[in-house]
Length: 559
Image (cartoon, rainbow, N blue to C red):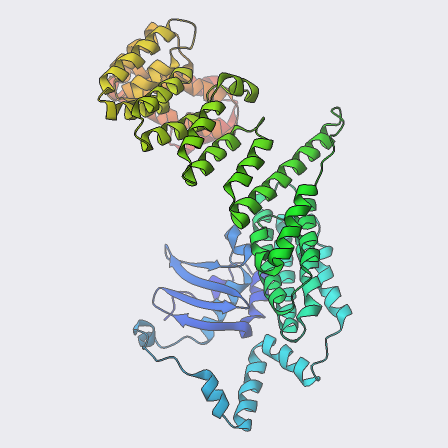
């Protein structure tokens, strides 16, 4: 017995997914059962139905399932499973190990009548087989090009797709892929430009800044691109034309994850050379500084060209020197590219070159140009290379410079790790604490690193004393108060109460919920300290009684 029934597949009476899935039951293939799951395929999608927390759950390789919805493919597999439900004992049985059948040999020895019956039966249950045989029965003539164009044009009309449009988009892509895949068997030259049009339409269909829609569209584009690559093998395109099309698509549309690596075989050496030349020829004119939108578009285009060239050099040619030359052409505003150069040199085994480059990148002039205080990624990589090459003193000096410029618990612990090979951990600790105490006396809030690091190493008493001796931020005071609360609840209570008021003053639903949770902690702290929580809570409620959302958040916590 399966763990679900028809009611689980149709939670809402007017569920359109159920209607669509019911119409596709005949397309379900490769249905497999086990006591824990049902697996099947619909078109090119793989569906897995499982039981999670006593409820039916579906996972499908289609884009819509990325949004955690029970799609039409899941419905179809579920209905097919119920219709063909095996006996209970067969569900529990282990699958029989069978030798793979020699299908070509079987078909080669079958008589004409057997083959006709076999293909007729397949055509009755599989639309793709039916369509292919229909084309062959018509003498192999190409289907009507206008009809195919009209089918692809359904995507042209799908501009600015919103979240509610995803079911329609998914069905359109399914239908296009299903039809073109069949036509491509005999007429690959006909469908190749249609695949290319479908990709461009998808690349321009996303609503701005909606990552949910973008994830679905990117998944659809990957499927269409995969089909296009297969067609290019059967009907090779002109390499230069394909390169031009790909560059235009990547630069002028939201091509998502579409990369030159997907088309490397189809482009060949000639197409790849043309692709690289096209990217290098791209020029972006400077926009009027007063036109912010135009300037932003120009910057985006420059960044996109850079990323495409970077991918080509990293994934296609693999030439480290060319990649570094590219990076050095534009590092003035992006220190991450400085880090990337160092990583590429290190990966190529050019450790001395990597060290020289990273030292340059960490120089005062370079950091001033980049507007950075401490590019920790640079220091982290430089110290790692120093350690890798046994230059432990240089590694420790680099770590100290990073800590001195940006004293945090992260740079502190990195400093101690660098001191270990030199047997200088105690020295590093003492030097760091002296530096932090000196810094804390300099100006307001410069005690934050001292208190934070003392808290991180577990010296809560010293952190508490430092927080009172020096001036530090409210956030850091609350940080150490939370740690002190376990042994001294009476000391922590005033800081929790201050944090509650700060949360309430933000007048946001999430902040109200956080304040309510803090009040439950305060109730526990007052109980441990032997102080009056009820009177305090009554005052809080009285002060904020007009904030209905806050009062609701309190009620949910039982206060």
